[in-house]
Amino acid sequence: METAASHAAHLLREMAPQVLGVLARKQGDFAAAEDAVQEALIAASAQWPVAGIPSNPRGWLYQVAQRRMKDQQRSEMARRRREDAVALERAHDEPFVPPPDAELGVEQDDTLVLLFMCCHPALTPPSAIALTLRAVGGLTTAEIANAFLVPEATMAQRISRAKQSIKSSKVPFQLPTEVDRAERRKAVLHVLYLIFSEGYTSSVGAELQRTDLSNEAMRLTRAVHALLPDDGEVAGLLALMLLTDARRDARTGANGELIPLDEQDRSLWNQALIAEGTALVSQALSRGSIGAYQLQAAVAAVHDGAMRVEDTDWPEILALYGLLMHMSDNPMVALNHAVAAAMVQGPAAGLALVDELDADARVSGHYRLDAVRAHLYEMSGDWERALGHYRAAAARTTSIPEQNYLHTKAARVAAKLRS
Image (cartoon, rainbow, N blue to C red; front, side, top):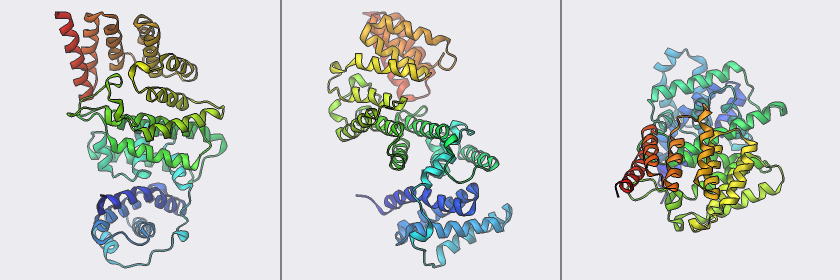
């Protein structure tokens, strides 16, 4: 059963970009508006679970944020800090009649505008991710810092620099022009993909998955898809997330250990997500304009369509990765293509393709190269080389569940060497 606190948190995440969009558009200052909305969210998260959710929660948030922004505009930084307590107390104690939603100018496109602003190509991916999670996702700085295992002060500086970059660029609060839209749309989808990927397989720490991040990425991608229902790549990205997330419950064991795809209990896969994702990608591909996210979703659909690992259509997956190779200069795509080649043509063919990636500075030395090599050498019966590469991969990854899995694989290979 959903608690009052969890219901309030859900509402706040949903309404944060709507209120921020209104305030930024009316005031013309994204950075100041974002600070003000964060203050309003803090006040709401403290009050609503106790006093109850207002009849017009968006109006409540907008009113408090607008007051906070006026305080910011009237005060210098030092004075504003001294008056924080007074401002919050006033937000607690002063009754007001919130304006109707219609008067707020809450428009459907505001979420999309915010995404385009937060994912500006001038920002680095880490900065864009942090700003998107805070401004559009409604997460606090502390929550984002915790997700990426960095100090809150470090994340605050990252977000502050990102907002300053947007302010300095004088980007207007509006959808980009047709000339800029393609590049900006690519940045938006890339940031959402990175957020999902980090949540699905955390790059650092003791947990394999950060479901708060992957869920947030899916929620935001659903919002973009609702705004751009005819965009094939948006549909492809959402389908990829759904088809991948469908395996979530089968990816870890009782103690949080990693379970690879070929060893998962497929009865645990979420069939509703698989059906939704498959329908999305099928519809997107039928439109004729094929993109990289659609092809990746198609690969995921082939995996999810096999209820036994031996039923996996590897020739189809190899063909899809071949198309992706022509479309995307991505070394991880090339690595997945090598795995598919090994499954169809044998481990020697896969190893030859992996060897070609050693010259690619973007991926040379990456633990996944060693992990794939180890797997392919194990397939070919070369236990000694497999052992060396499993150990090398374990030493290079910063994910504890992946380290444990690779050490376990190394131990099994070592046992074969001794036998």
